[in-house]
Image (cartoon, rainbow, N blue to C red; front, side, top):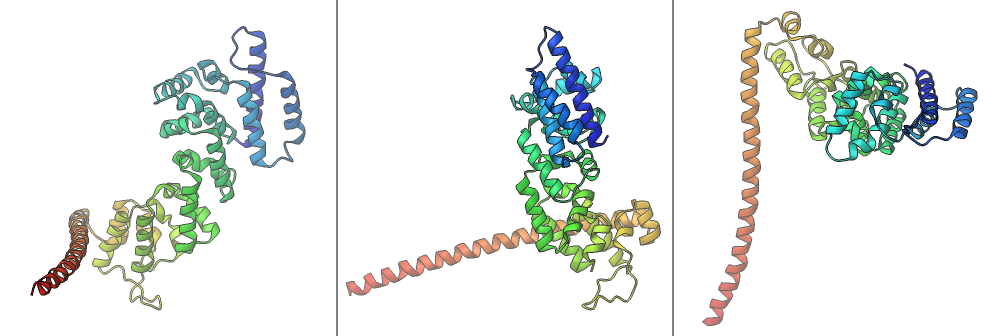
Amino acid sequence: MGTTSAVRQVLRWTVRNATSSVCSPLQFGRWSLQPLCIRCRLFCSSSSSLPSGQHNHEAATLWRKTVTELSLRSLADMGFTDTQAEQIYESVSKARGGSAAKHALSSLTALFVLGLNPSSVLKILEKCPELYTVKESQLQQRIGNLRKLGLVEGSLQRVVAHYPQILTAPVKTIKSVVVFLREKCLFTAQQVTDILRDSPAIVQENLAQLEYKFQYVYFRMGIKQTEMVKSRLFRFTLDEVRCRHSFLERRGLYQTPDKKGQTAIINPKLDSILNIDQDTFLTDVAKASAEEYDVFQRLMAREWREQEQQEQHGNIEVDSDDEEEEDDEEEEETGGKSGYRKRRKK
């Protein structure tokens, strides 16, 4: 459902609620007929000239003014089936504290104005019930920030539907990831947009682990940024990348390029290493059996655990050395003072 369709749905839903509010003794919200006429003229006459973000914001404002209370009736009027409305109502009721009930209506409004249909909205909220508790101002700010980063209509909706948790990440967090990708990894602005579109979970990944994964692929595997983006590298964990690469390397099927980028063999592309299932990887790329790879994975897991333990032990030793140095310094100071006292006694 496009933005225009979403706005039309909002208007139809708004008019229907306005009529029922006037004619029915049950009041679901405060309504003013004059703003409706003004806003209807605005949408009908100027919709094509309004920017997408402003257009959506106007629709959201109109929708929110119609109903100020979340109920089964209001959910049904939004387009949810009775079963879907009950699911949402129960989810909001079970949520901790009063923030879910307070912000649920604005969360639903924001998702509808993005152009998502009721079924998609329900799936999103099932994936990420935390969205019920996000303030409207925060949602609008986060959606606006994603648009600024190049996620235009169509891409933005697909990203939110696939990974709704991106709307729970503060703008500051996403900006820090973008800065990291631009300044530390030297991706272009368009490549960063492509990464956010194809691997949105990157916004909640630890930056230290992210940096290690990038450096491993860049230096150990000799892969450049363009190929990383094309292969959607950031969809995969470091262990997944490292295990397949190491398996190929130890079988003599992959070499780290030299300083000139040359290798004695032709390395398989990163895309053909990562974006295939395990059976295809073993048959077409590694030329190995599942049993061999299973044994290798267990050996690698044990090897990595030992490395981690050694690193942790090394950190402990460094700390203990620092403490010993501090003790030595204290002994020197006290020794100096005691020696001075002994000389005074003589």
